[in-house]
Image 1 (cartoon, rainbow, N blue to C red):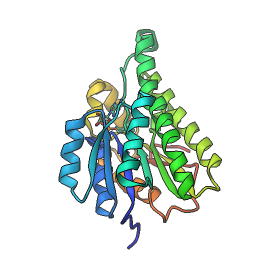
Image 2 (image 1 turned 90 degrees about the vertical axis):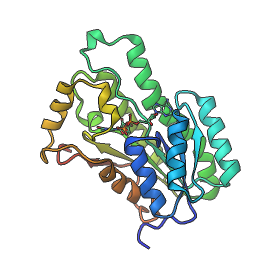
Image 3 (image 1 turned 180 degrees about the horizontal axis):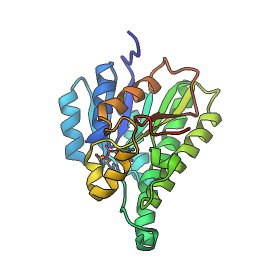
Image 4 (image 1 turned 60 degrees about the vertical axis):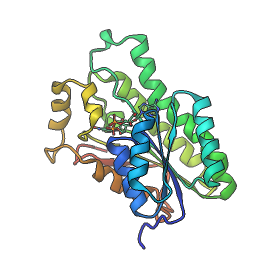
Length: 247
Ligand SMILES: NC(=O)c1ccc[n+]([C@@H]2O[C@H](COP(=O)([O-])OP(=O)(O)OC[C@H]3O[C@@H](n4cnc5c(N)ncnc54)[C@H](O)[C@@H]3O)[C@@H](O)[C@H]2O)c1
């Protein structure tokens, strides 16, 4: 089957809701066993249970390297292998001008969106290297390419994810591991509750398709990047932005 994932283990961070949930369901439908890794354990358990087929939930706070380490060790113990990592968990932070952004506001967004991706990549790479196979997909954002006003920490954090993706993709390019990023424009999920309606409207108006994306539309591109079919593509950023991206 095209984009077959049978027998593979896929970790999806932030899989309890939104885009992460759609990614879990899509990869599971292709045959993967999903580890729904989230700080919201009850939510992750609900998704894992509804997917079935051996998928399970793991508690993780991706801002803690110890929590990520423990989570990955537990997955290796239970499954013996990690084929796919989707670094999807993220927060928008506060939508406000720079003068109103506190040290804590900025640090919190960086801790989740950048440190979390770094910790998870660092934890899985040794396992992937030892098996000479792996697919890592990082969910960045169009904000990381173009910058959204009043979202300085978020835009900076997602630009960092793109840099991390390009660096790591090149670093492990001869190890059978592909590392790519997806840069969505606005997708209707709970993350938008962190923003003002005006901020969401500003972002939606910039989309030539004149609509928000659906979580399933992001999951579709993630599916390709997470598969064996993605074999000569690494260190890239893929737009899912309804035409918003200009490069
Ligand atoms: N929705 C959009 O418009 C949009 C656009 C571009 C990029 N993205 C990115 O897509 C990803 C998913 O976004 P979403 O809209 O589905 O968000 P969401 O708020 O619906 O879901 C985020 C998930 O991440 C989990 N999470 C948050 N902090 C965590 C932590 N410290 N440790 C572990 N899990 C944690 C939450 O519990 C939740 O399940 C994010 O990285 C986001 O930046 C979203």
